[in-house]
Image (cartoon, rainbow, N blue to C red):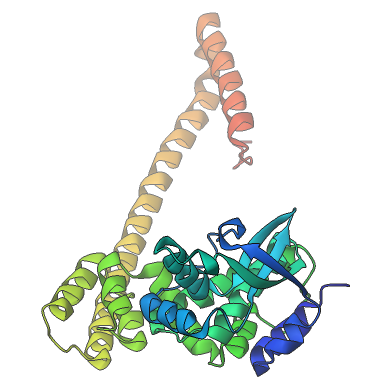
Length: 315
């Protein structure tokens, strides 16, 4: 069956998990044979409570969702449930070792998309998780583009797809991207802890590293720094940088004018020397003519090497 990425994303957008998993086959596996890949980067919490619930229920109510890649079963959805099963078995409850699963043969890119969709259906996100998810969706969809699985129509952007799937705006996705790309680890730490919101962290990420660290330190110390205050700091910094650029450009213009005048003077001196040689060439010795001929050949060589145009003639 052909892989329909837009159908997959539409199902993710509307929350129709069944539409995605209806063509999966059933299988029972030892949980240790299920590979947990690097693609699940979300926070894992309340595993003990989940393990207790599974134990009371006598097993998993919902099967784990797997992608079979080159014969190996990789976990696409149900990471917390697998972790809970592992906790039970390590605690001596061997009867929970073999679990119900559903699987489908997938490529690596298809699997990455199913991991993202599985998390979207089954997790309660923090803002930090959403930032990670946005980055993962962007990378997965760009890879799908390279593999011709996703063809964007004119005017469509990957960011717009990510925003629609995550149920937010492209502007918020832009904030997540700024935090992920530009925020220092100290700001990301406060953001992950929930001490800084999306707007505040995104604004802070636009500041120099030293100022970001200062803000993160103040937040860590318990200070309530509003996003508006940080935006005002950003605006002030941009004003300073604009003024510096203006001053630098003025100096560059002045230096350029000076350099041009000096260059013109030097060229005029050379031209004057050549014209005087035209007047007095009959008094030159053979040795001096030979020197001029070698100088001429050297000048031609430099012109060829530098790829310069002829600038004029004394004739």
